[in-house]
Image (cartoon, rainbow, N blue to C red):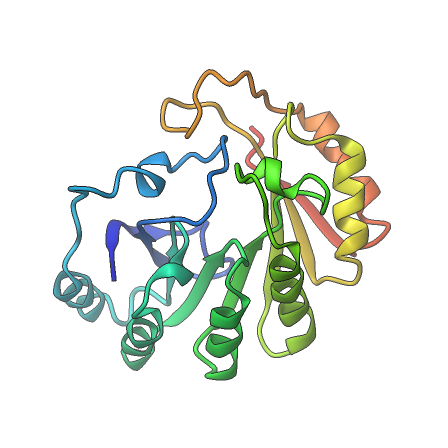
Length: 234
């Protein structure tokens, strides 16, 4: 596993649980507003955290931490992800996976092996706008659709869909289209965009929507999804 970052304690990343968060390096998307640019592009010479250090830390935190969040980058690109999760589960921790959903075969296997306790999937845009928003010239939307269907159909573990809403890439109408596509999902979160020096394309002219604008989008999305909330707004 190429783990390049660790947050030792978080009360936010795993809903309802005290957890640690591990950041994997590498991603198959190039979202211009991504705030973890160093985990997407700068892989040559990137400092890796040895697995023995990670598991040594987790061993000491048994009984204190409840779960481990695996995020990125895109974790499903890691060839030994399944074995890594098994080791975490053997220590008694819950596992939450953050994914962009572009490798449904990996997600399906992890679900079938009963290795996940929570999944957060980024649903980046409407079908027509997906490639642009993730920074690709072309994209197989069917892969995104398959992952979404897997989560909505499995009925065993909690999951969420989320969209980072960026003025300049998204419109209020598009958020409604996403919610309609995900009709019947358990929960959907709209996340506020924040400009920083760590985004993939700084100075691209992206802006955040106001709280009022996001709340109006959320209200429209509730026509299709019962629980819709706004995150990341002061």
